Each structure stands twice: as C-alpha cells, then as structure tokens.
Image 1 (cartoon, rainbow, N blue to C red):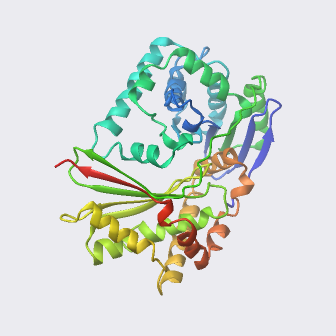
Image 2 (image 1 turned 180 degrees about the vertical axis):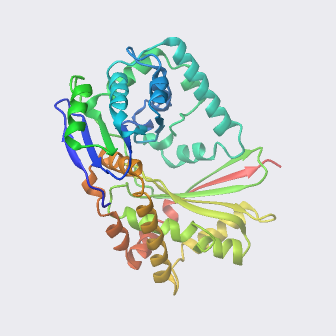
Image 3 (image 1 turned 60 degrees about the vertical axis):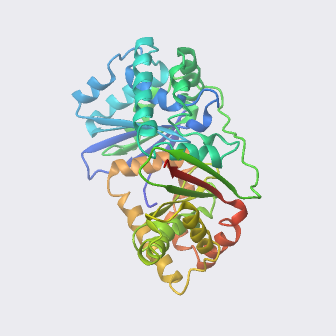
Length: 413
C-alpha cells in the first residue's frame, strides 16, 4: 500500500487518519467502528446490522440526516461485516465539515425513537426474507457458517441467526449495544481528498474532541478447537439443482500465511482458467460451475470451495472426484506460471483500489481498524513473496481430509 497518510489520536481515543490528495475536488469521510456481528450475544444476533440501519434515522440535534448531505451534494452509505461497521460520505471538499458535524452528533447523541426502530426492524426483516429465506440457495451461507463454526461467533452472518432475534430486539438492546461500541476509543475516522492535515485536525477536535471516552472494548472471542475428523451434513431444499460446499479452517487476516491462501483460492477457483474449472467443468464435465473463496476475517476464517454438479452427476460422485483431486494436488508443471498469473492479477487489483481518493480512504480506515495501517503497507511484496512450497504446504497441513467440512445442499425430489 503506497498511500501517504498522517495519524492523529484524540484524548478520547478516537484515531484520525488524514490522506491529502489535491488532484481531486472531492473529500471522503470514512468512520469505522470496531464492532461487527462477532460482538453480538448469540441469543440476540443481527444487532450490529440493525444499528447500522438505525444510525440513519437521526440524532438528537439532527432529526433528518440525509437532507443535509443532499444540500451539499454528498453521497453516503454504510456496511456491516462480521468484524467492523463502516459509514462513509463523499462530498465536495469544501463541505467536509458537514460530514464531521453529522457523524459526531450521531456518535454522541443518537435519537432513540421507537417508531423509527420499528420501521428499521421491518426493513431488516424484509431484507432477511428477500436475500436469505425466499431466494433459492439464500440460506446456504447461513447453514455453512453454523456448521463450520462450533463456538466462534462467526457462526452467524451480520443479518443474524433468525427473524425472531430481529423482531424481538428492544430499544434497550439497541441503546446498550450503541453505548458499548459506538464510542470514540472504538472508532477510526479517515479523511481523504482535497484537504489539509492541520485543518482536519482542528475540525475533528472541534466536533469530536468533547465526546467522552467509553469503556475499553475487549475484542476477545471463543476460538474453535482444532478439528481432528471430517464432518458432513445434508440439507433438502426447494431449489432447481444440487450444490456442494466444502470448507477448511484457515488463518486470520493478519497472519503472514494469509497471502498464500488468497492466491491459492484464485488459482483453484477464480475464472475459467483456474485449476478446478478446467478440471471439473471443461475436462471431466462433472460440474457446471465451481469456485473457491476465502473469508478475510480478523479471527481465523475458512477456505471454501463451492460447486454445482452437472446434470446426471450425484453429489456423492462430485464429492468423491473433488476430494480425490484435492488430496493429491501437486500443482503440476504449471504451478509456477499459474502462481505468477494470480500474483499479477492481485497487483492489478491493489493498484485499482488506489485510483480514487475515497478508495484510498476506505483502505486506510479499514486497515487501521484491523490493527494498524503499517501492518498492511507492503501487501504487494507479501503477495509476490509467496512461494510454490507455501502453496503445497497448505495441502499438506490445511486442506486435508480430517479437517474437512462438507455440506450437501440437495434438491428435493
């Protein structure tokens, strides 16, 4: 990451990151709270995502959040992950104080209006139904996470475990979650674009400096025990075809081995020239589609392979062929060339993420929230340092049969 920045920490613990880019007339404000679905109580899930929605319903001094952004030509949005919640605003640089005014007021004094909470609960419940319950294959990731994670709160997605948890959330629940996590010492704010460091420091001190520090948030979670035998489960659903998902526990985002896993997922299952696609779709015709993913999470995540068996191929046949291939994988004669190919692709993606000032601001904010910007500054070098042996070692130590988790997602006959 070749992004210049300056860091400033307020007395209340809020971390400010400033990136100056005077080639653009715009500025962006990214504020990341170090709270995601992993910070929820297992009996009250979906809270982080619901609060994200509720944050747009106004604060005590600013009942209409969006109108002020519209008046200064701003665009804004937010997202919730398992690890963080991020709010971002992009606007003409001379209006950056508007963004700071709005964000500071809802950090300090959110308006806890019951009618608005009821509206947002309904919105989130409809989102749950549309994307996870009523859509074919919508609950696959919900079922997969619940199966793979036995103890860690990654076992549920940001949307929550079920509709009941959202429906029964009370104002006291929301207020308690907000008071615990939406405090300056649990947040990072990154300002990027046509701004000047000294001016931004003064503005952030003006709008955020008097917000009281909260209790120190302890981000400690129950880790998974080492898996010593394979696990398999089957689900029957009203879907047009069968699917298979397989997963193996992998390292956390900040682990140096992460880069090897990321490149391997691209080599195995990203695009029509990947190992899995060429072998099982083009050559053997056992699958009509097959991909691989990794979960880039703050705590240990999962290396995932997901595929759709071809017509006439049973899940059992597809599974047997896939495991036979994976557990005898050597990379072949083209391993070095394929590894270099995905390294080049990653370099392109990294450079693409640095084109816009708002993207640079997002990268800085999230990196700082995940630990520190410095830990991610040399990512290109980390990717390019991955060796063939590291790839082979993953198949020796991680993608092995006794650490395998398999879901058969079967079409009802």
